[in-house]
Image: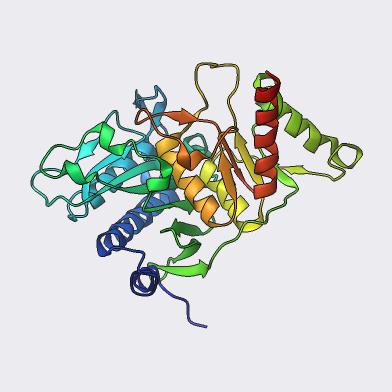
Length: 340
């Protein structure tokens, strides 16, 4: 059976589902081309002189790697001239990036984490690019786009996806009609549909969390992980496996392929922060993808996609993956709140 290309898939979505505006289709294709370019640089590694740190830091105070900055520049340059966007925002930039006046302005906003999993760049472990598309507010025509225009809940997303740069380069995408995966054919340069209508099993025996932080977790998370570690002899009466790559795209991709639960919870080291992952660049697009694949995504108390962001670089706790396990952890959080 002949595989569909990404372009064929998007045109079908536009025609058959009536779900995809033409501007969004073109925007996704541009992002996908930029991801191919980023994947090429990731693949060259030391041969391309792209490994190692820079002397600069991003808005979160994190040391930037060469590939972080290069990937950010690739996405900006690829998307600024096409006429589909009003502005962009990136985890690597302090504020919004308005479309230069030299180019036509469109009706959408693009957010992205240009290279997720930076700690793994220099050790040849899978990393990736995450993106999210929002509509620009209708009252933004004729004025400068501001940070406030981006502060929309995840339910407002028009499309979201990620590219994972691993043994294969894979693009996973949703436009609100399911979650689909495309593998890059490196010989032809085409994205080919290889994972159709991905579904996450509701039950799982696999969890992903950084267990070295156990002593800092809130009681509901410790309770859940303790139950998993107790195995057959414990309350759950079955054995669990732990997986942790420390690259969100790689951990979430595994969950989309075979199920599991991913937890990056609040911890006591920075009690004023609700979590470490970014709501707008990481949690919202991943939650959209996971929900469209039949999974669930919460911050421990409520649905991630319903959180009203208060700032562009807002952080959040993330619990996502197989629905029954996510609901269990969320229930444990609510039980603690009720008792309090």
